[in-house]
Length: 285
Image (cartoon, rainbow, N blue to C red):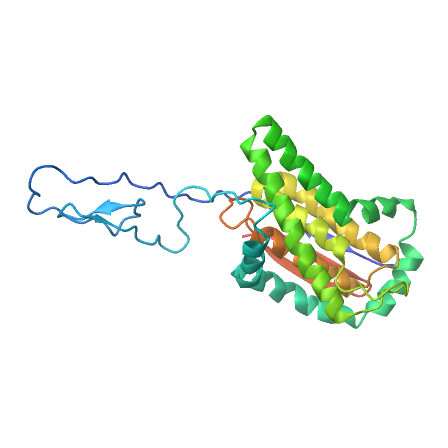
């Protein structure tokens, strides 16, 4: 039976409503007018005045409402904050809740999957995936993007490059920690750093960040390449299918952890192992 790795990617750009902060209410020099109503129930700016002219501290925004765009963090010093977000944000739980069970099912087919991939997924075409998915390649691209943005004073490009770098650092800290903890032998027996796939994690990290910033026009090809990287790692006899699935999960979660508050394409994730392969879906909400 030939290996079948089917990837259905259906992503769509969904505009998100943004709230506009109200103008701060300043106190009048004259006596307060009787009957003035308090507008605190509406989305509030950073500071408001009550009907007595006293400046009050800002009230928290309703769930899902933010005032203005998130402040970009320094990609070289934010690793602590980003790791905390990775482990505490609900998106990580959602992604792991989808991918972890699929990886558990795929685990029972790992040996058969490697045998079939070695028989049917051969050729130099997969060399590009094994090289392009590497952490150094992906991180170099992130640093290059950040540097171009900084040198050209292009804030958007610099922000994307910074988020790419931040996400790569988060994903690899998680990946290497899990590798050391699980000590799983690679299919080719070269070492015990098989689970999860670092190449796959790096590629899906980049795809996740690009999709959040630029929408499906960048996300679709990026996720397609990331899937190709995962297949390439199986073709090279470096990873089992369960390694690849969990690598993808870590990458997606890392990308979303550093882009909290960034608008982008909204979709639901899905992954289902099939005999000798897996189907990954990204479906518009």
